[in-house]
Length: 256
Ligand code: NAD
Figure 1 (cartoon, helix red, strand yellow):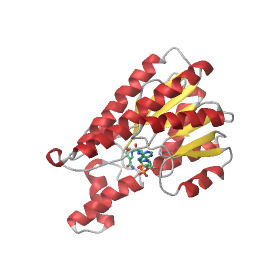
Figure 2 (spheres, helix red, strand yellow):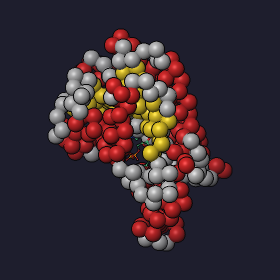
Figure 3 (cartoon, protein in one colour):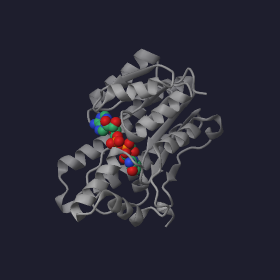
Figure 4 (cartoon, protein in one colour):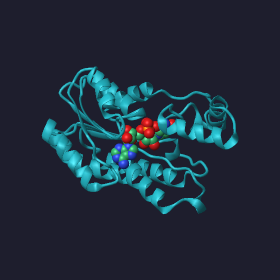
């Protein structure tokens, strides 16, 4: 059980982050949520499962916002026991047409934000000699796809940061691991399916089959609930010596 523990999940107003927040709340954790969009609806979904729920609107492209977010978590709950670095953005374009602003934004949210939350969360975790840091990477942390240069680079970087964090905490009760999903049915993935449908003049069902068929042998999306359960495993006592892994949940994508 995670009662009396506080979890901070970045980008938890949607998709995978919301799924993980719900899984953690179900185990009794208090939640600090973060992200844009329909904040009230997301908070209600998590609050319905028990525990206290707060939200902080930090824009993770801004290190000063991240410092505010971490201060808020420690003011409200006395610190963060479970840190889930989940917020992420995508942009699809060939390298020659990839705009520098898109590169900078993706590196900021998908990689640098995790450096900032991690360095600010570690002192309280070290004081408690317990902590779980879970970084939501991607199959694109392990292999590349065309037209996703910034995303692939940032996600490969996250796996490096995960290993570095795991080593620096290896003799403590703090662990750091990464989850590498393939296709998960969330707004981020559905936008790519819709863009493909539009580009090829086909319907969404056919575009889904094309997207999955290219890469994911199971031909199935992973659910946000299943990713939530994997995150819970990393939080469990049984996972206390699982350190620095990049665990794929990808329908066989990276087995090929
Ligand atoms: P999503 O678009 O459904 O949710 C993204 C969340 O991040 C939202 O809550 C959004 O408000 C928040 N966010 C975005 N920019 C932010 C910023 N600057 N500051 C604060 N919050 C911000 O996406 P998702 O599919 O749930 O993705 C979550 C994570 O999982 C990402 O890191 C993504 O790369 C990764 N991932 C997704 C898939 C997939 O198929 N959906 C596959 C592999 C990895």
